[in-house]
Length: 291
Ligand code: NAD
Image 1 (cartoon, protein in one colour):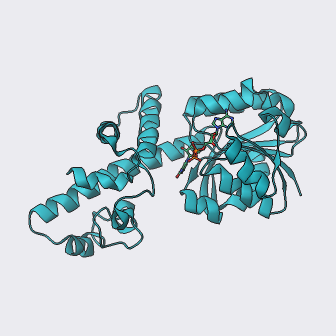
Image 2 (spheres, rainbow, N blue to C red):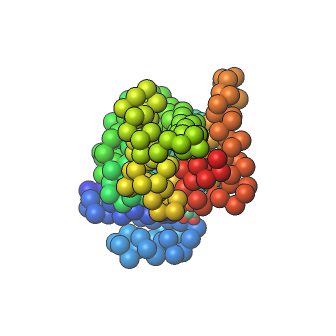
Image 3 (cartoon, rainbow, N blue to C red):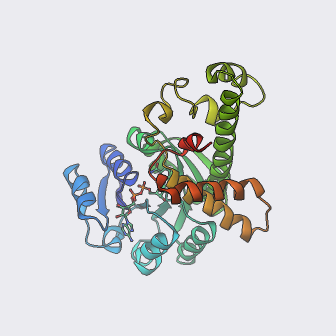
């Protein structure tokens, strides 16, 4: 069994760390929130005084943090890369900007330490159930070293290519999701205004060329897909503020790559306004109510 340092024990990281404890590993935990740490020590984790203390002598480091600046703080300024032994594997599972992901992995490689970016798809329920999808960027050796630890927390683990490519996959997927959700909301709203029952539109469109995940698994019109947040007054699910975070990352990434993403920009502007209007904690499918 391995010694794991787990840093960032929030909504997603907390249950992921618990799954590592359940798998029999020794898990040293660190978070800025004392409450988050206590939840994990109650579950059998060992509290560490700092990220570097948690990482010293560990076989693996896993982080689940809000943004690129926190990831750099922990690995570079916080001394995790300096603290770990050469044989350790570092896995950042946060959703962050591509340049920060590549910068931190380069810093690890410069010290001869293997590291992957491994952002996830799936929310808190998938984190608790150990059924996340991981999109992994890094060398073949780093992917092979990370895979047994990711297997404990996820069901689908995909190697997306070199360092940073996990974040690239995540940002492209979620940009498409934001666009397709707005499109689905527009179609169901327009149909209803023209006298078409949303259930009938679903019956047709879910088997026709307009079919997409936003419709068939997460329908924004209530009373059609039982598990969708539209049946729980748009309680998240996936909060609009989180969708906005990912769309902003997509626009930053598009700018650095000189890629044209006019629909991605439109979706970003749309969610920007939706969140500004006080809907940050509403599910991202709630935009149907704006139409
Ligand atoms: P969260 O805010 O619940 O948790 C983040 C945790 O990091 C907090 O406990 C915070 O105290 C801690 N933290 C922040 N800075 C720190 C530092 N310097 N050192 C140690 N701890 C620090 O967020 P979350 O929902 O768990 O999301 C984490 C990441 O996962 C984000 O990048 C998010 O985009 C991504 N993600 C979230 C979801 C979701 O449904 N919540 C889904 C997919 C991906």
